[in-house]
Image (tube, rainbow, N blue to C red; front, top):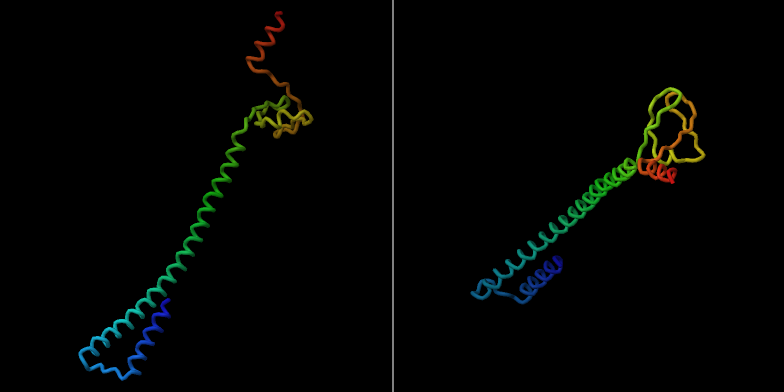
Length: 146
């Protein structure tokens, strides 16, 4: 668009020169001043268009940088969320019958029917007997009484 304005202003200047335009007459002075103004406006619009193009390029770069920052922030939160989900699993304390040390196990490891438990402190292999909750004990007592 800006190049079109400069080209049009140059075309009009050429018409004025080609038609033996008298710039010294009253009307000629007004038209010559208007022509000068038109050329200055066309040059200013071209300058603003170039600056605007540069601003758009910089804005696009900032937008890409912001996208990177946002993805980094949310990626960290997603990783933290996964760690929190793992931390939310129920953990159980188990006492080794060999050395007496207490180890912490998750429910999956504890309930594995084929896996023997190995003490991380002394290396002894052992099985555990799961005790029921207080509610389970009360139900079993009631069944035995009947």
